Length: 346
Image (cartoon, one colour):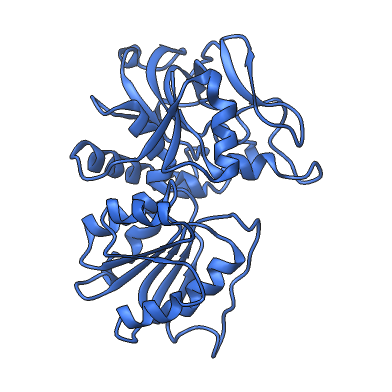
């Protein structure tokens, strides 16, 4: 079968032929119908050799959807033929966090060597993939698998970041979105659908700002030296109740913290900077403000995200590629020339 793999430190991904896997007891074999590309893939492929821990060769793809092809011993055979999305942050399934459906914060994953698909385990950027447990499958019904695949991360991650802040986003409040890419354009839609806040989106290109307007942002402004003053004016001097940084560069963190109001919440999602830092403490941030760093999302939240999409209330702007064109899609991701999310349709 064809697979897209990262095969050597510092290289670009390649399309290769590998053997089709067979499901072991408790596992599921998925015939992949769609697999999304993510900046996390680039982050992994840019890691220096001394920091890289994901194994080589690595079949990429942690955003996956497909149809159950076969099941291993102990798995309900009635699952065969079901269209599903893959919940990616796999955990042990038995610790306290996993029992609550919070497998993205599994207490034993590192100890047990459990890794997400495409981020340590063979991923979805292939014609077939192994899913370690049926609990990591969410039925998608008639939802387009291209939409479903992208929503497993590009949808779930902003949803998990925004949902805890909803009590703050009452009518008259303001949410600032930094970065209108694959995650940011979905974050804008979620805030508009789920709250009474006005949304102010910032980016560095007019094309991204137009995408922000297209998906419902109330204001789309250039991320430049005047941005802090403009946000202050749009909030009547109060500052933002929520800032979500989907870029994660030092410049965006510094900018976003200047936009935060008293009692506001700063949520750092992006990792473009590879380890940027925030300034906290008296006279550094507004009183009673919060700075949080969430990771991916909960299993039940993926159900909720997919329901929003099936209701027509959430749409991923995608560029589709064939599996043979996946390396070119990654080139566009590296170059920053994608509009929305890149997805390989198989």
